[in-house]
Image 1 (cartoon, rainbow, N blue to C red):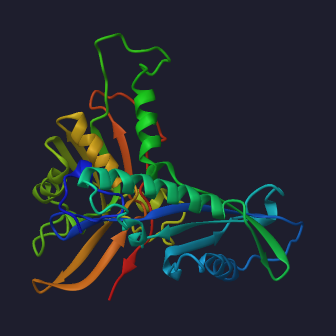
Image 2 (image 1 turned 135 degrees about the vertical axis):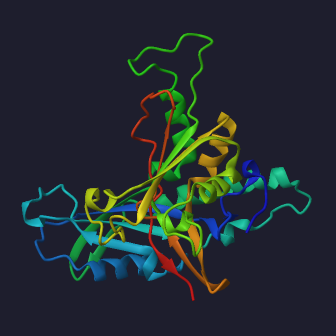
Length: 319
């Protein structure tokens, strides 16, 4: 848990938020499986999952709930180069990166060193699993692994800087007129997490404002139901999305730096809710990554690139 200023929050620490919410660090890896041979045998998702977990065991212990694999649809109609399955892997235990190499190191230097160590480890881990071949009962699969854009803050930052350097028609903005993103749009957020306890299950403007004020001064805030979310997602049931129980939140900050810090903290973290019953925190928690979308835009109806989107994952329960 951390009470550090946002700009100095390491990528391995949890940020506590009001209303029992927190942002917990994790590394998310997108997985795509291809056939390495002409075999037409049916795909066993459980064996594919077990094989990958066994491959990771020497260096990482990944709970089964943190690895999701599902077969592609219409496998009989696919081309040979098309993927046969896809999935998501989450690495949540990042404590091994917190070692301090120099006891005399200043806090700012230590955070910078940890940031560098985290990025180096993530690159190394991705390189280790990207392109591996899994042999499952004689059937060979090739794995492609990548970090989503939403978990790569440097890539996001570069994308919006490049986008806002243009006027949307391929021409640079005139000198003196500088446009920067200032607004977060979050979709697929559970409404009850932003509601007033024991009052309503609908999101509260006051509660929502209190939560997002942690990131900086808010200029405008809007909350609305996201009733069509479950209908528009390809596999809403598998992703735990139920239409009518989620909301969409717009947060416009007063200055760019607050927006910048908020985006940096949101990248690579899951939103987590501690459950409360009868006024007492019962030690159980739910963590949501699925259907949780982050985009950036300008209030003046400037379009924003579709690249800047997404914090996704799974639901967890801890006894």
